[in-house]
Image (cartoon, rainbow, N blue to C red; front, side, top):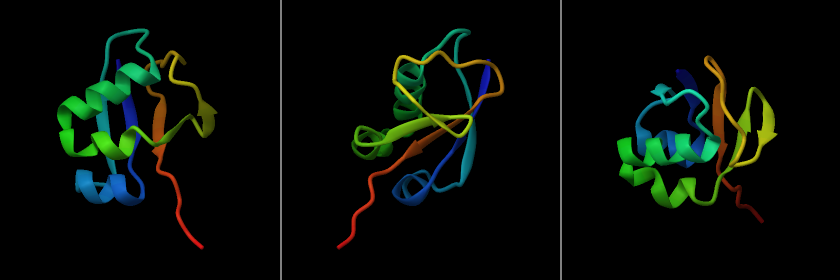
Length: 81
């Protein structure tokens, strides 16, 4: 199945793009999609480890199962002060 992935902030800079299509097995979880992205873009690993995730604009756990056509977003931590 195909999942649409959007990149923000540091992830966008490291991936070199705003969005991507990711093919994962049917019933894959957010965690499995994260692992597939790290395999494709190893430079994302440190940042992805600290990111929250959202599926179709709602926060999602690592165990959430994805369905074909879902939008998956990893939200990097924000700094400031």
